[in-house]
Length: 299
Image (cartoon, rainbow, N blue to C red; front, side, top):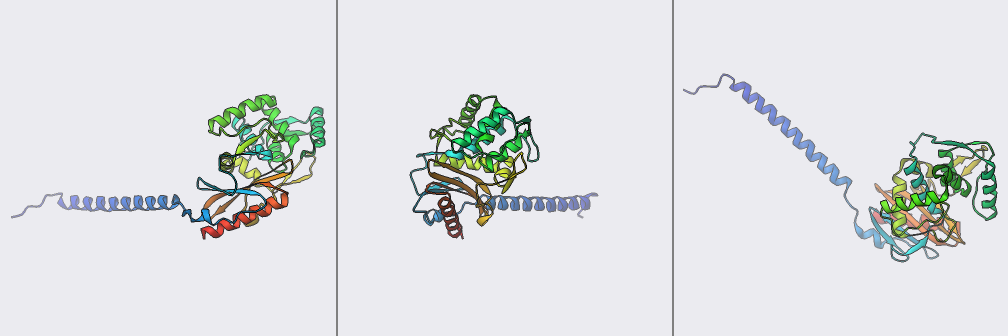
């Protein structure tokens, strides 16, 4: 005669429950693995041969860590011009971090700041309105620098953060080394000196760091900021909102115009760099052309 364990039914029930729970867990893990795999799937390399490159300037595209360029190799040097201000913002925020809604430090604008602003304007550099005695916050200075590309506010931002430009340059050298950006050299925070140089590879990596920084990306994607006198300061990047463009920074030096735009393309962050354009209109048209061809290549 076969005897049943007095708790046999209960054991079998527990076993069935354990089996069901294990099955659900396995299913959940399987789904997570599939979703994770889908989120990290790389696009085909076909896009690299299908970019419509500009004829009047040079350009490069960064996508998922890959870089293709119409100009020299990714490690060839180029002048960073006002793209340098992306580095300035990142170095300042590494020293004095603020949140997306924080104002940061506040200092009054002084007579020396007014004189420096006029001197920079006389050199043909971009400036924004200054008012002696007006309180200037760290965030406002960042906005004037990244939105309006204002050289005077860039210097105020740096001197109030580090005490001097030289101290800023020392911190910048350390920051670049920490991020293995050994081919980038900064001699002033504004980008007005031709000795501010980088490479295609480095500047696209810097652009990615900036794009992933919540404060830098939010400010760089702002279409209009407000100066201390209440006047509107439009973003120097008129492509914001065009074909999904959400950043990042313009530059110009000695008649050569540059631009980095960022935009989501088929679920990936794309970075388009244009440099050595003959005008601001050309750099913008060339960036739109390259970005449109990238979208078409990934369809």
